Amino acid sequence: MQVIEAGNIARDYWKNMWARRELLYFLARKDLLVRYRQTLIGIGWVVIRPFLTMVVFTVIFGSIAKLDSQGLPYGFIVFAGVIPWYLFASTLTETSSCLLANAGLLTKVYFPRLIFPTTIFVTCLVDFLVSFVLLLCMMAWYQLPLSREIFYLPIFVLAPAFFALGLGMMMATLNVRYRDFQQLIPFILQLGIYISPVGYLNQTVPAHLEFWYSLNPMAGIINGFRWCLMPNSITPYWPGVAFSCVISVIILLLGIKVFRSAEARFADTI
Image 1 (cartoon, rainbow, N blue to C red):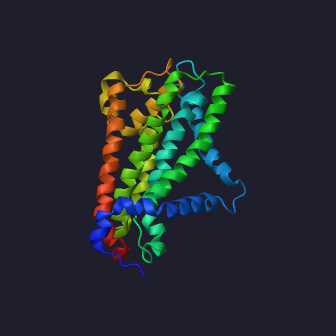
Image 2 (image 1 turned 90 degrees about the vertical axis):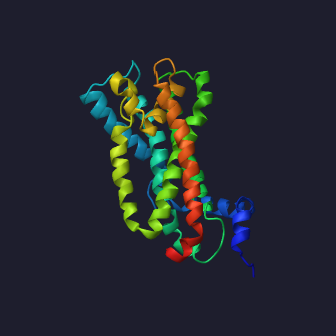
Image 3 (image 1 turned 30 degrees about the horizontal axis):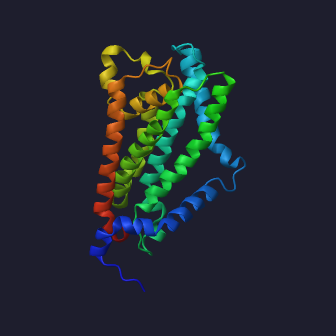
């Protein structure tokens, strides 16, 4: 029987994380296999959900509101905003509930609890990559060329994931004691998708409001993501982009600190 001492846990935490990498692989593989089991469409839901969101937003903002698309296909513009948003939304939703969803495992076996958010990070990135393949197919269909700016794309893929992980770990920590916080997530995401430039370009925001609008970290992230794909047509508000990237890392580090500070009490509280 292995004896766990609190001092050793704190001192060797990251070493323990690496030693249990097989558990991370097992949990990630299980989540990917089970997520769409006994569904008619299976993994197709990864693409269908953002695709349907794209259709609705294209009709509302492109056909009815007739917002400017800078000469680009409006459906492509929306889809290029939807998939980083869905990466953020799915990571936040699943991370915030990861402790409650794994309560049985949490109370029976010791391992670094950060394995749960890390597993979600991996599985949500896999889902994102499936949607991104469709985005590349749309670029080929509309004959939109790839530019060298696409090499900056990993920054704007990691930024929403980091931002969501940090927020999610703080919410997960609160959810263990106060289950009310779980009810806030759908409301935050429902509001956030409209106050973020998912269905429209940042150019539609009045210049005098651009600074205040950029305080929403997802605004800079989505604008930067689109710029990597369409640098000749998209002009981001660069101070906002820089703020979004920096705040994403800060929120991630803060989330890890909050999560780890309460980790020893998770099994007793849950």
